[in-house]
Length: 491
Ligand code: HEM
Image: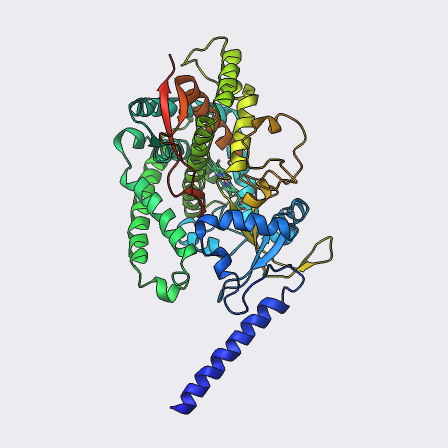
């Protein structure tokens, strides 16, 4: 008995010594804010609703590069310095995704968000044109506008409400948009509520978040006995069945047409475009295509819904900015008509609205932190070496709230984006470098179409009673107490 107890004590002590040495020697050149020897920064980060602000404070204090440590996890190295970001985001040795993204692989496979290596490079090259073709984007603007009209109907139902949370509305709007633009499917989520396919998409996102945040669910051996594992199986079954039905219908109609109905391909959704790639002999298997469609579904709706909600919340609290948005609408359309025929060119002309969106995405970056894993050492200009296999977190929220980059960082001042003096690598809502967001243009057009339409129809007002957001980092930035506003119909 005594021998066993002594053995266990020795093993635990050796393990602790190993962890302490590993975390202190391996990365000794990277500043470490004061921490407890055994539980590291656990207490510093315990309050999740204060995490973003705390990390912003620490990264500023320690020069934009820190390591934080919560046992038994490896230390998290966090970057918030613009020059280091520029170096790493463009570095060939930092193109792989960090561990957290693994939990999405069961759904997204080797799709663009989770994939890596040569395969990612090839797919990125093949998929880039899908997001840049002017004719397709123009077609998508019509879809944004049509579905935006439904959103206006839904907002009309909220007029008597002293306040309501905009986020659930934005989720349904962006789900309708991404289903129609990705696969040509009309889901009608805004009118009829979530379909079981869309519910499964939501479920998979929530499960991935819970896995990332849980110390135990990270381990497969434990995870497979959890409720979430069963739910994941169900959700994936639903997603696969839905997709298989779509794809077999598509293939049938495509092969029965010798000439594509829309000859220049301008009305093609993403799936049509990927299937054409396949027909042209490019190396995209059916599985590859499904992974990419799942990736667009995941990457393209929650992010945009989050961005849209924070923009509406910000506008509601800044009537002077709303007035300027409206003045711009009047200049572009010649009068304050509520439902002009909005085109791609009109959206391109909305420069002030652009600044408003950029400023809201600065204050509330929809993805507040994202990560990479190094495939080789990276030497920084100050001589610090970031070793191979290290996982790095880019704390975009900290960068966006740094007063050296953005004076008065907590103020909502769209005008700062009208000047040409934003420092490179300080505004990163869509990341930067080779793995930046492929959907940026698409997202900006969708947001502009939606916000301009809502602004023409409604005066946005603060929630009654007014309140402060409770921000927390999940995969996206969430507000635990919602994003509430109230509405008044414009006459
Ligand atoms: C406001 C809306 C959006 C924001 C803020 C946003 C933000 C981002 C960020 C920060 C990344 C880099 C993540 C990382 O490196 O881990 C990213 C990547 C990506 N985004 Fe977006 N995104 C938005 C909308 C969209 C849309 C609408 C789509 C597709 C329809 C999309 C598809 C993707 C894909 C496929 C990647 C992976 C790119 C690669 O690694 O090659 N995103 N996004």
